[in-house]
Image (cartoon, rainbow, N blue to C red):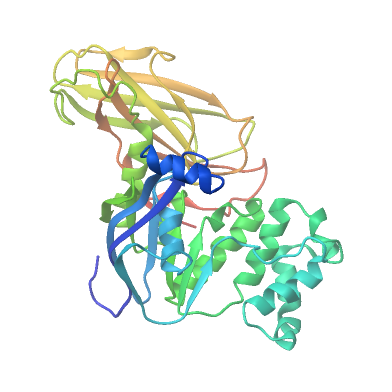
Length: 396
């Protein structure tokens, strides 16, 4: 990562706490009783605990982590929606938050009226909204619904409309929270094109997402948050791989005795061998092998398989309890998997593999990003025009 460039966002030792009520204290009498009995009536929750990072001008900065890790709280703190109890935040330039899309919408008004209402909240004049109205509606793909009341829209339609309005706002720094989950595949492609445009223009963007494909494709650097702290900061590939690894691993049996096994002892390598083409239809069967080598006979081992859609959390997981070894020559073990694709949607997928100790669930080896199998599912006869991996990078 480069340290060159002007720093436009600087967060230093950010601490954010909330008081979560644990007992009811309606009325003065109950409050006095709680005080006399030493009851606080609340617990302290700290979603952000000593968070520090900087964002340079023109960077596409990713923030990832499991649900409840503190990502969205951090974004809202940067946007001044929350005030931190400790630390400091310095922002240079105008900031546009894409957080809680659709806040300010009136369900009793039509889609058309809500465009003008939301535009006004973003600081646009009526004439400015009128000039951009057709572009907003076309991007949202909701022209035939614009005179319907918003309460008759699906939640997805509402968010699409809100997103289409929000991207018209001009700012030096954009805060994006989970907007990649908006709409169907066709609309998501529009979102991806918009992010490509932001990246080409070298806009400063801070993105919170669970989509590791987008982290690798768009971000220039990223951080992984866990339990309110930065666990790892690094390149997009490093962060995305760590996030995937964390989700492959499980904390089950964490209190059971651990062994002395390491990532290289006794398992020396694990890899995926594709036996299918890289662009398939839902009528096809995906076939691949997982092979691992070991320096000595190892018992109580299983292989975990994780299939990800567009870089998101695993859709399925298999282990070798459900697949028998094809080959075990004493130093190399191979498992073959066959997966019908008729229940899967279109999109881009990747398969990763990891070797665990069955008894303790300790991770001992895993495939790298370059060693994963990346493929796409398209309608039969459809020309390929999507995104796949080449040499570890997402390409068209």
